[in-house]
Image (cartoon, rainbow, N blue to C red; front, side, top):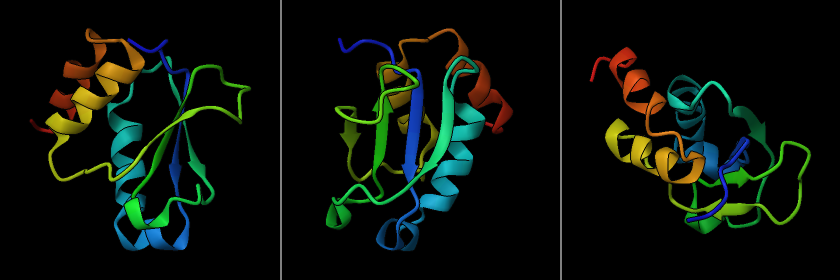
Length: 102
């Protein structure tokens, strides 16, 4: 299992925005553990596979972070599973899903 992410960047480049990354960013901000900083990110140069999300192990780390392509926001449970895997915080994510009306 990868080390827990401390920061999440959601691409807001032109191609990812066309695929709904603004809505994805808003959803991740609601669902992510409170210990994880969520931010808007610039293009990650993987446009055909977007929307793209970058998971940073350290908040100050800008390089070498893991990019996950094609992140869907249509099913909050799938997104929560990804966040649980990447952020290693299974206790907080189900509570945040309840806030989304799930």
